[in-house]
Image (cartoon, rainbow, N blue to C red):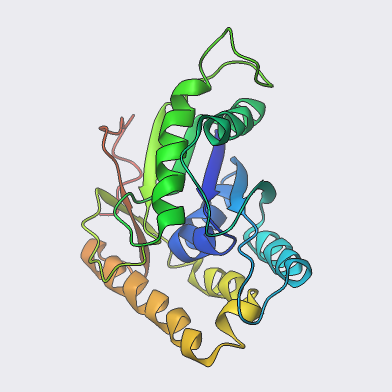
Length: 227
């Protein structure tokens, strides 16, 4: 089993981009930690207190742990301090696999988060540095799609989430202030299901989530391939 870190710029990004895979990983016995860079506030219908209730409810649905880093929403910057904060979480969790947002995105917080996490991977392995935990270099960086662009994903691989799709949707709807109360955002939930359905059709299953890697993934066998 692996220690896995899933980093999101705001609470709900992980649920939208890879909620089904997060559920699968937890069901398989992996130690999955969600790291929210910010609390996601302010938003038109939300508050810090309400948003916290929502992200905790979503984590319970996903069956994973969650942690807030505490950077400022809409002001995330690629700084040494932010890199070291994330590197500390990587070391404390001893993360072997790190999921992070796809790097091509319209949202400045998303782009900054990706750069921070990429560099934090390197910082986490350094020995003579004032960070908690033992040095570790996560073996895999895997990008999930939570973009603010009209972007058609060209994934390296897709993961079958047919059995997890309904729970993924429940975890998204846990964010009532984001996807229930704002009328214009209700269609996002339908769009996500449609997109996951399309990705599923590409690999011959009902629903799937797309992922991208810059580095080649190593497979021990072909047993996990969808045939």
